[in-house]
Image 1 (cartoon, rainbow, N blue to C red):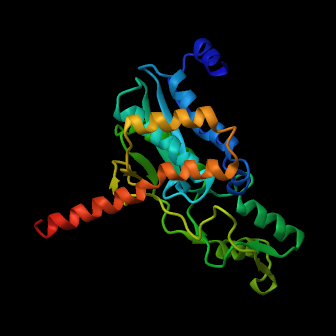
Image 2 (spheres, rainbow, N blue to C red):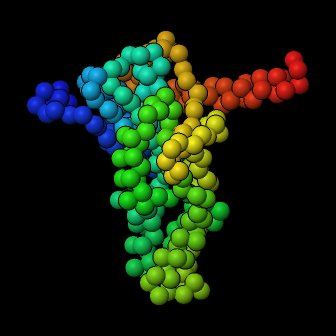
Length: 278
């Protein structure tokens, strides 16, 4: 209702859809709300702002690539809905999907926690000494979503060249150094990976990464799903996601995504068979 009111009263040409629940640990225990906001929130936006002169930029996350968390799974499903609308020409608006890495210093991030613990002189809690993440600055994030509006390709997913992943323990030492605290004075407490957390992230499922005219932005082509499969899944979620317990709902979501890994293996096998002449 609110979206329809905004559409009626405002002459909107570009929408940057960044609304989502994004904290991995919180969503593991609030799956129905993750579905409601991250999946149906995206679908509602597409359905309301479906007119020819509108461009919609969907903000996704690197956690959507081979997701292990509820956050990653719900964001990947929102990507699939967008892909499905584009593939079957079910929408007049232009839709572009952008995957972010971790935005450095964003609200509720690990970096914010590290800074707070350093300031208080507490031990720094770290999931694993080998844990690493992609990072981007707030300015890079803003530039990415603005610059993709100037790029014509809208069938694939955009990602930023964020360089190599950074070890979280190295970030802790760097933050301490900025506070004039010696490395030897920092105590790091390993707490182990929580449910849904990965040791490291990936930017794509298929690894099919292509260049764009902007040297800092790349395209990735990800698996697509049939209209019938997506519609059936969405209908099942819409009717039952609040009545399912979290264990069942988590299983339903990840079962829907399970064949994406299989699709990649099938593509790789087909490529090998072509090479050897079968």
